[in-house]
Amino acid sequence: MISSTVCLMKVDAVTVNPALVSLYGNPNQIVTLDANFLIPPDRHFLSIKDIPFPQFKALWLDPVFDTFPNLAIHEAVHDELLSLSIKTFIQSKLDATPPRIIIHRDSSLTRVEQMLRASIEARIYPHTLYEPQLNNCADRGEVKTLSYIAVKGLLYFAAHDHNAIQLVEKAESWSTGLDTIQAIKMYEIIFYLYVKNPAIRKSLRILYKYQYYLTDREKDTNPEWGIFIKDMETLYRFQ
Image 1 (cartoon, rainbow, N blue to C red):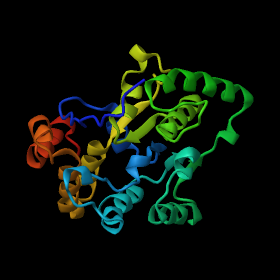
Image 2 (image 1 turned 60 degrees about the horizontal axis):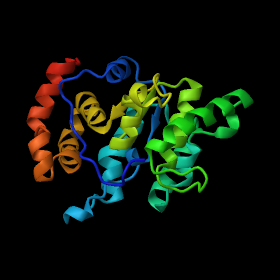
Image 3 (image 1 turned 120 degrees about the horizontal axis):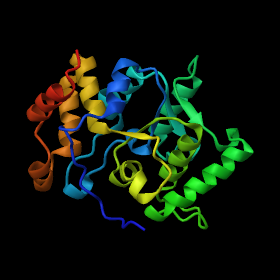
Image 4 (image 1 turned 135 degrees about the vertical axis):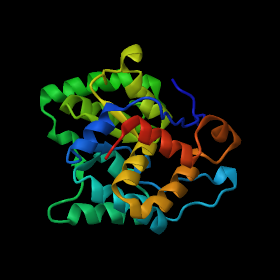
């Protein structure tokens, strides 16, 4: 089982992510979000002021939902959203006509799919803090989300969580059964929005720095904003 230690989120600006290329060509594909894509980042342990929800909504959530029309979350993630602001935001997307978010529900699985889902869950959870017997909250959203989209043949899982991403990227060596899923990191979507929406580039710079370039360790590991953009533009050459 993994530890609860917070892992450094590394920025990889030298390896092309086929998922990002595919989404650039067709942003209408279903992208399933981890909870951390919806919740304002909290780095209070660094004595850094939190990003308030209205600001996070304006600089991140609204642009993401405006850019990708088929975003989804699993019901386990939906049930664990505690903030009234976030719950209200998601409900507004559900109430839209047509709905602006998809909720993955386990009740939609056939009996065969349920059996397959259980098999995949059994492979995933030993690498997480989730205990099926206890049905505890820790990592439950990730486990339920990933096992569901694997069964349904959905391709894209967007997250800002090292351990959740590792479940996908180490699918073969860890035998998680998630070999068909492709992970998309927050910094990749930040760059995507930078290209697609020049009007919010200043805000995206603030978010990038907050998420990836605050601590000395992060500054030793990750590129600063200008170099990040230059490297990503060289890597993807999006027009």
